[in-house]
Amino acid sequence: QVVLVESGGGLVQAGDSLRLACAASERSFSIYAMGWFRQAPGKERDFVAAIYWSGGGTIYADSVKGRFAISRNNAEHRMYLQMNSLKPEDTAVYYCAAVGFSFGLDLKKPNYDYWGQGTQVTVSS
Image (tube, rainbow, N blue to C red; front, side, top):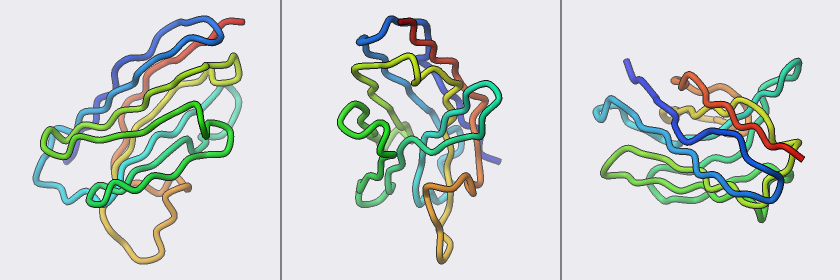
């Protein structure tokens, strides 16, 4: 069982920055990719960004391109999300997730194997 723990959420003003972190407890799990999703009240869980664990390639939702940056530390099994120029519409609970390899995997869909408990990000206008 892999436990993912997010940290770094908080209350900020529009235009500010935040850095989220996600730590994976189980290092024997063969991670193929990790991702960030977010869920605002009354809405579905939306894709934010993902990173391939081996090569480091990244994928972003259009709404965060140019403002958010995903990165990882393979040795420490940690992933990060640097969020700049935050907007009120970025307000949500942010979840990190990890997935092993499978054919046809779409990293933009929430079909991940493990999920964190979420961390709240609130951006005031």
